[in-house]
Every structure is written in C-alpha cells, then in structure tokens.
Image 1 (tube, rainbow, N blue to C red):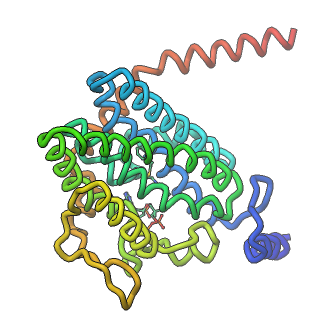
Image 2: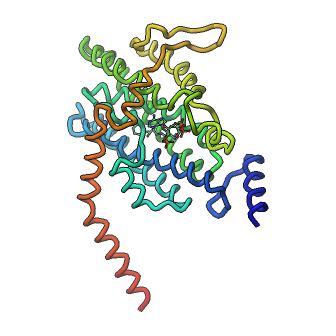
Image 3: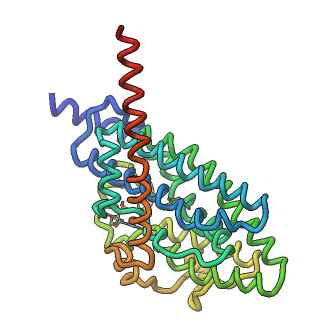
Length: 311
Ligand code: FAQ
C-alpha cells in the first residue's frame, strides 16, 4: 500500500542506503532526479563543443590525442547519464528533444567561447576542477544508478583536470606571450566557473528538498567555497592571478573570502542570452538531425534481427 511504500522509501533514505530502479519513489523525487540527471547529461554533451573546437588545431599530436580522449570521455558520460535517467522512466529521445528545443537546461559554463588554446587548459583546470568538487559528493547521492555513474565519471574528470593543469604548467614555462594567454583565459573563465555551482543558497529553490532526499550532500555555497579554497593555492603554484581583488584568506573563517558574483550575468546566460547559447543549441540540433539516418538504420537492423530470431 502507499503508506508502506512511502515508509520503505523514507527508511532507505534515513539508513543512507541507495534507492534502486525497482523501488517505489515519490513523484517529486522522480521528477527532481530526472531533472538533475538530464541537465547533467546535456551538460556533458554540450560540453563537448567548446573544446571540440580545438581538436583540429591542437599544437601537437600529443595534445590532439589527449584532447580527443577527453572529448570522447564526455560523450561517454552523457550516454551513461541518459541511461541512468531512463531507469527512472524518462525517454531519451524526449530528453534530447527538450534540449534541442531549449526546454531543458545544461550548465551555464558551456555558453562561453574558447578563444585560444590556453582555454583548453583552463577548462580542464577550472571547469573540470569545479565539476569534480560538485560531483565527488554525488558519488554518495541517494539514487543508486546516478551515484555509481558518478564514480567512474569522477575518475575520468580527475584525468581531465590533471591534463588541463599540466598543459597550463607547460605554457607558463614557455614564452611571455604564452603566459599572457594563460592569464587571459583564467580571467575569462574564473567567474563563470564559480557560477557552475548554481545560485546562492538563499535563491536556490531545489537545495532544501534535494538535501533532505540526500540527492545533494552539500549546498551550492558550501561547494563553491570548497572550490575557491582548493583553487587559490593551485593558481599560486601556476603563477597566475585570479581576477578578484577581494580574494583573501580569512583566518577567522578558515576560508578564502571572495567578491560578489555577477548574478545578473548568470540569469542572462540561463535565460538563453549568453555569448554562445544559440550557437551551442543550433549545433546540437544540426548534429541530431544529421544523425537521423543512423537511428533509423539501427532501428531497422534491430527489427530485422528480431524477426530473424523469431523464425
Ligand atoms: N547552469 O535550485 P538550484 C560537466 C539551475 S560539469 C545552468 O540550485 P539544483 C563536466 C538548476 O538546474 C556541469 N543551470 O538547482 C564537463 C535549477 O533549474 P530548474 C554539469 C543551473 O539542481 C566539464 C535552477 O537553476 N554538472 O558537465 C546552474 O538543486 C568540462 C535553480 O538552481 C552537473 O549538472 C548552472 N550553473 O542545483 C563536461 C552536476 N546552476 O529548477 C565537459 C549535477 C543551477 O529550473 C567539459 N547537478 N542551475 O530546472 C547539480 O549538482 C545541481 O543540479 C546544481 C544545481 C548544483 C548544478
């Protein structure tokens, strides 16, 4: 009966055990989980574009091989996240339809352009760094298929972060112009990276419920602070300046203080008016349409094999 199912669900959450696809879940939990997983999957897929832009122009075979591997990993992450959403009853074709018609979100960060090759390094360092910070706690998320997907994704994200940092270290040991490129890319990506963690806790409509359901383990502001604290020493080791005059260690709090984030910019990007929103969605839509024949052929092949087996 419904109260029994509800008690079982609440008990599973309280015991810190995982919810599995066979388990009954309240409709709100299902909706929230599908929303977060779908947005996450879309982010991985759209996130292939900014760096994909540099594959044909990587400065060496080594850099090209690394970048290809990274972008392919992102496709893989998107695919198993879509599979995780399917275990909750979502339809993958529908999720893609929602993405290409602008009805479902993906991370704000991927609406910024990649202007030079240092951007590839800075995306690895800051964007993947922020992603790891946000996603390591999600390995303990209450929904089993999502939590397990996160374990492998985080392992690959740490490779991505390392490749970015190593690329930047190399550039910083290079010419004056290369050092300027790294500083310029850092200046452009720092604030958008902080926005990846979502709105401040006071303006985050989903946090309280997602924490109660143990989907999220920390609030947006907690994770943002953790990221700042982790990144400042890395910037020092690299020899770049983070573009925030208010950034300083606060011994009383035991954390770095930092300046106010431009939330109007964040809202603008979320509303679709960021520098690359239209381009990213149009590119994804074109790729989806151009791939229609592959889906049709795969479906025809599957139907034919099924008929063969039934004979
Ligand atoms: N961009 O109430 P909250 C990657 C939305 S990493 C766009 O705080 P919530 C790896 C939010 O969804 C990036 N939308 O929401 C990679 C909600 O929308 P609604 C992907 C944002 O869910 C690296 C509304 O605002 N990572 O892809 C953003 O509790 C390099 C209100 O916000 C994940 O998705 C934003 N930045 O917390 C790939 C991680 N922030 O209600 C390629 C999993 C918030 O209208 C290259 N997701 N919104 O549907 C999460 O941890 C959470 O969903 C948060 C947001 C923390 C993102």
